[in-house]
Image 1: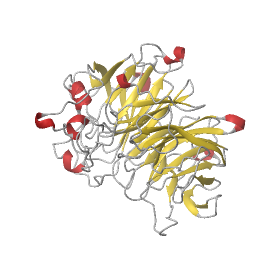
Image 2: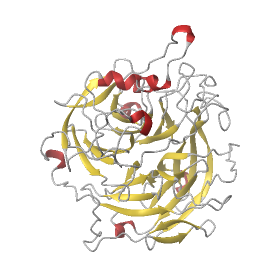
Image 3: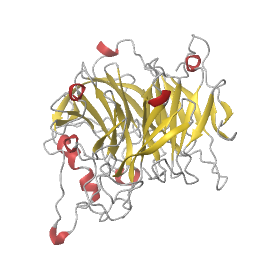
Length: 492
């Protein structure tokens, strides 16, 4: 979000009680805060990055380990027109990779464009609201970053932040907003009168074509960030990035398992995570290393609220609308996190990031600084045992700053994007809590010559064969990278 982020840790607080480390997480003991990893073959820690020229034009935009290469594409500092006539928007954000035609990789990529205005690209059945400027693009690209084909996959959505890949061949894109014609001006003061439909939903986008632009309204109207899917239980897990207020972790259970139907239905139930025996647990606060909580779920009675005008026809405040779904869960004891962002499902576990968590417990000044006093946490939720475990908690800004999008390699390493207001890295994170560097943003603006080092990384995703990492720089002038090299040598 385009908001000044909190950069000063206010202090520390004792963590709440928890159960013992056991069961599905036995053996996953977190390393010390800020610890460097052991090398892939048990050798010394590997942290060295060096400037590498971009194979597109020879300019240095990334620092990478020795032996790695990359090519950037869809750099919107200059206008780019796609095959269907779309003028490519910026704000490249969440993304997933799928097997594509002719040996290529298909990327479905979000564009987190806010506000009202004409939808980008051509309009059709894939257009949800002609007055909204966000959406997704479909890109067929080689594993070394050569674009073969690209077009609009869905448009007329708003603030498409992240999402998640579905095993039946789809991407679910998430709107990080609740704006619409029934909501008052947003936090910038911009009116919502240009929207023709309610926003704050998730949408399914097929890998092999365009979406039908039908929102899954029963999966909630709240500031969505990312989703992941558990194929055994047929459940969608959803994160909420509510910058100024507590965020929730949700699950949506469709009436029919999409592994049978091939799509998400709109007849399911939405629930919100709570900690057993600890109503309204403050999980945004500092946690003990490796803490494990037992989890239960509370029902959301009205997942898709429509907001009515008040006296004199005044629209309800944006702040009240942002909290409408989450407050239903918190009234039943749901836990509060700080800004839940990226997530990924792997082998029965959902890994997700809590971007500003890990500092002192919130005391009510969040409207000024954002909700959360720390520099980030990574959590793991075991869907079978219903236990929640802290994988990593940043000890400070210089170690790990504001984890955002997350993915997993074929070997099981977590790969996390930073959203810092200083240097931004892509980090490797073992499931035992060891952290190391994979890439450093060193892009400069072609127009101004100024550094873009504070542009966040987003949309990390591996090609199906695990050989190429695709990742975005998310800014008004977005850019995508294909990165390849000896991943096993750096423990990825």
